[in-house]
Image (tube, rainbow, N blue to C red):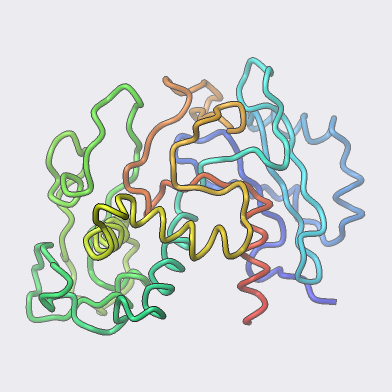
Length: 289
């Protein structure tokens, strides 16, 4: 019997932390669907309350298929909108997995070369480097070994001015980060980088953008991943129907001003999805392991 424990047996997306992280408590370390089904709604509700979590999306993978999926709780503290298996959550760094697949799709289509120096004139590499003689490639950016600096994605209040990718890369207001740059020698050691994926998004937009394709990054992921895998509840677009999303909360369970933050760094952290759709991706990846 094949079970995907190495990747993630149960995915839990929680509308709790400002950072929008995946929360994987020990109480969900089960091995059979029967054990999951034995959990009563009362038990789950008690555990969510203990951790100041208003709602959760859970999926269980067995034998390469999504065997079980369910939503628990509510999208926010007033308990007016129930979470179900289609409710979208902000997925934080999981966005990078989908962005990577989009880049690899474009590599397969000969739009990009994984190992060509990004200093080649065709890539418009305009990021400052403390190591100009060391080559930065797409492969190095994808695996966080390009030496680019790290900054924490904190999101933007929906009432605030939202920076463009160019402003984020250059560290110009209203962006809240320092300029994205190569600050360590490429390939010297891995260092997690939000900035690398911001650059990847800008690269796709520069290469594929035009009058007939004004949203090249989002359109690429939609075509190469969401439609290909029939992921019906995943998108890099800001939700139109807010009755189908889980709202953001601080660590004390308080609803964020504006109900959720915006993340213009879409490739790095702008994904909306749920546990069921992520399980579809894991099943697809596991098929090639």
